[in-house]
Image (tube, rainbow, N blue to C red; front, side):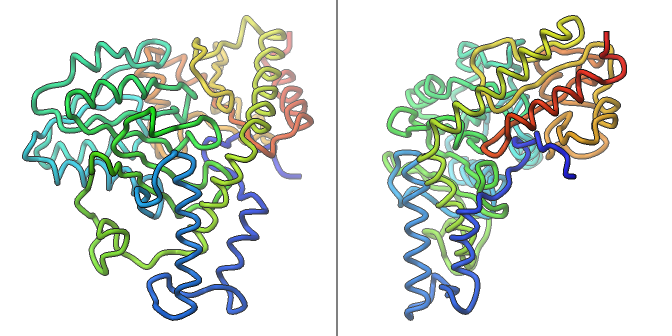
Length: 381
């Protein structure tokens, strides 16, 4: 019997409807052509690619021409940060971000520091939120770019990107949003959030791994220096033969997420409330929420088990697949750097577990999960 999967923030299973769409662009019986080819096979593939572009753009209320295909959200982030820094370096070489960003942002910023850029890493408040006044104080005359994550992948904390975008826009500073966790969890309307660059992926909302997109605002025009050259695909900003089946899958995943947003949200909120209420009711002296704020998505719950070691807990729960930190944090690290930046001490960090739910998590699975946790040695009263 498979363990109960409660790690949707790391990745999601591909929705069967998405997989069916993708399969139609793989085999000889389907539309397998190269979207850059001029014959009928290529034209059919290109039509599918452009339909998917429209589906992703619809989520952002953006123009399809503002969507550039990439291989994943990490590549989109690299293209946004490195590409913008390179292209706009005459305006300045200072970047602002947060200590709680995904490694794709932090490691890219560290590389830019080696290449001569200066980076300010802002700490969040204890609730994980960034104080807008601290962001404003960090901006300088030579600040060219600010990069902030919309939904934190470890805590579910939602940053006020609308206010941040207003702040940077007035100053003429580019604003990049890592929105890998946003689709299917929150709306993100570029008519209200004046972000210049937005990174997206497919595999956090029931789409395939290996495909992503970068939004580049058209008015005012934003461009980036390409990381990959050869062929001039995607308006010259991301060369490479387009993976039609992956792109079709991403488009369909975004389309379904829009259609089923209310149902998915209500389902996940019910799961969250049940998990938290029952655990706190049974063990309020042992279990604490790490995110004492209402500005969180219900899909991600970060809990600490006081006086216990999270890794040891998970070893005793082979029937549950959850995590202690981001899957992208890597091995050999000492607990969550996100929780550390929020002010938790080492003991609290090492006792913390992230549970994340999704479209296919059932109430029965959650009940089974609760029974396993409540009956853990050290948890029984």
